[in-house]
Image 1 (cartoon, one colour):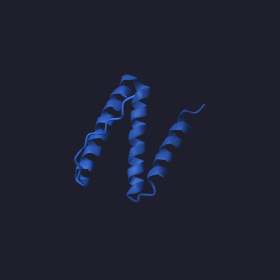
Image 2 (cartoon, one colour):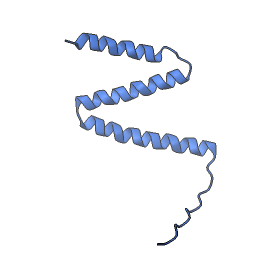
Image 3 (cartoon, one colour):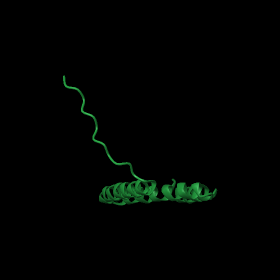
Length: 85
């Protein structure tokens, strides 16, 4: 058995660099996820819109908008009421 090699040292990133890296990673992940969803057809497209709506509601809530989730819930209830059998 060999001893584990120490991880190579990486320079510390500034807060701005970390934020930029996080944005890039999130953007890349979102693009890949959206491509996968769109390839699934209309159901995938609906899933993509749901992801977007949820992200918007979370951001609005964090920014102090207490109505974001309530409005999204009302839209979904109207949809369900309109298509329920």
